[in-house]
Length: 530
Image (tube, rainbow, N blue to C red; front, side, top):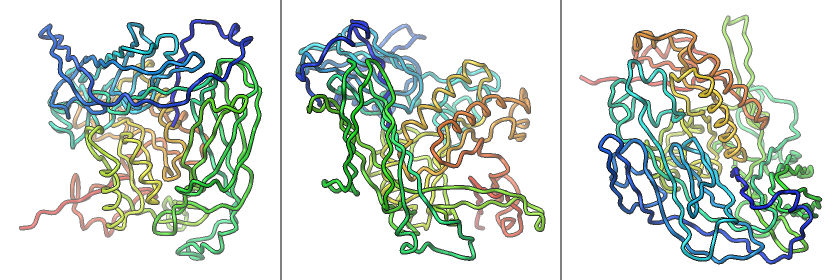
């Protein structure tokens, strides 16, 4: 997971560069979850009401049916150390946020799913610190064809068939999902803070086998697979000075490292990227559950100055490779495709998933239950449909060996304004960064049934234009490609990949004779007994 720290300092970086640290700092994390005071702003009635609520949670789950502006507030105490740096970190706020500490705004953020934060070292004190978070989660303005021109990147959370009110009524946005639904914490570091840790594994695989050559992998044949990884750290340095980085690799939940490495870097004051290579070595591979063990490793990175830890961060990773090849078969006169896991052809048996419209109510146990049910139905993959789930979902998918197709939260139609397109690109970067280390994620997909691909919209929207959102979809796709994390990247989940025989057209028996595209990313049918 990456946290974008906005550094707020009372001194210039040039003056910082000539100072030296005295090793008098702490490295801790203090949770700020719990009861917060929430003030609901009713602009129409020009009044406000307030009550205590739990954080993290969506305000609807706290009994508040509201769309628009609300203000969260809480106080906290902490132990101040002169050499320590203090960072206020939010895992997720739906949808817009402006954060103030002791009366001064320190950061602002847009987007419901991604972590963000700010350094507050110059503002914090031992006692009676006040945090105030202005949150805005409005409904889209009800205008003709409003849902074709949405302006918030919330996917199914504000427009979908299964939402309260449905997809095609003015009540389709009822029971708004706003609120601080992710954890809140105060992170304390020394002069160098690790803002992000990204690991991209590489496998030295033999040539790919055909489907005829293997129906299930021989783990013995692949036991000698050599792996390595590119490791990238984003660090924020108060001073220019030597920093030692230690890299320790653990198998699963073991507390004893199986590999240890050291790196010394003369860091520069400010933010910079540190690159390092995990050396080539034979390691266990991550497999989908129906083919083997989803072996996981934990990479812990510790930054130290003069022998004292200034910050540390860990990432759970898996060594695996995924590919998708698509080509036209002249003999059969149709497009064919093949998906590979670790160089072997693999058949995907998937489902679409929306755990809840209010993600704050889903715990790690809830996600574990759902994934266990999927596996009991012989499902080996899941598409997180037009939204980003809670971070615990991806941890559970990694552990369970379930492959994930991850949508960006674009569902049907949106504004074509350039500023909206820019915001979408920014949020793509946040999504691919925060989820980068999860071996379960095999696919990125940019836009679910964009208007330019969905001519069925002409029957729903009088103002429908067949070229709408082409630039938006392309911009999102190009940014997904820039992740360069060796995943399969799809521009869209296309209408042609969504046969709903027996539901929106035809009958369920038509599946036995229909011709489909190489990827089917959603499907369904229903039958009424008489």
